[in-house]
Image (cartoon, rainbow, N blue to C red; front, side):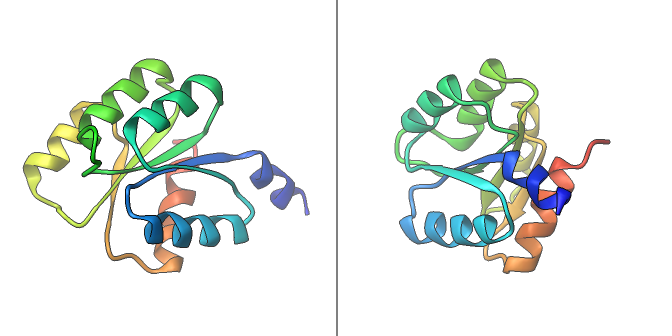
Length: 128
């Protein structure tokens, strides 16, 4: 019971321009006890990060108004302690290295199943 209470305090921001991805990820994470907020643009995500404390952000690599690596860099400047996982179908080493250099803590490759999503989130939130 305490574990669920602790998870309810964990806030996750999902950033993706695909509504279906936002809805599926949100549903999976909320059912696992996390508090979830969503943004469909980088601008919206930055506004939310400036006004709310999140423990984790899942960012799409390809957003309509800014590349995900640049968004990761800007989020890192605002809140360096927030974990950031890039979500992408493109695992090219150029994008991986750029995102890691800009503050990302790891990657989630699409498509991803529910169990793998939860494992990735739990791993990102586990103190090292």
